[in-house]
Length: 165
Image 1 (tube, rainbow, N blue to C red):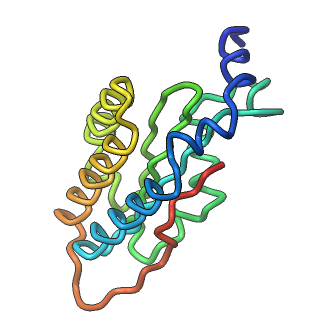
Image 2 (cartoon, rainbow, N blue to C red; image 1 turned 135 degrees about the vertical axis):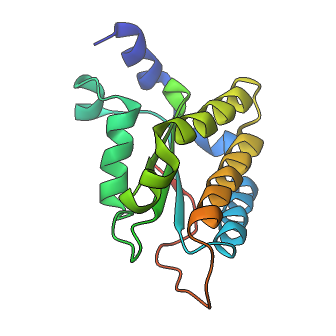
């Protein structure tokens, strides 16, 4: 466990998340998810967490481990075609993780998801959080549209609104 990491997480305040992702940015992210889901039968969720606290922090939980927990808690794995995708941002670590259900993960693979994460992280380093998230959602939607194109009406199985933890 790194004292530096603990310090970063302890000083990362919820107000910072609200400053970087104000209501108008969250609304734009939701619109981007809705627009993407109009082209495919997958389900996309975006979650931003300012910092870890309590047990996850002191257990030194990685962003990937936390993303897996959130994927499970939000039941993203529980979609009809096993094609749910979580885009998770741990702001204190500036780390993006994409967790995909088995139906889409087998088609895109770890390298495909990692490429999207790296592109988002590049935008984040430049201070372009909103643009990075929107481009990331569009890239995930492009993968879903290629492998799970929209057929008929289709049900929206999961909420499109971003989650702020």
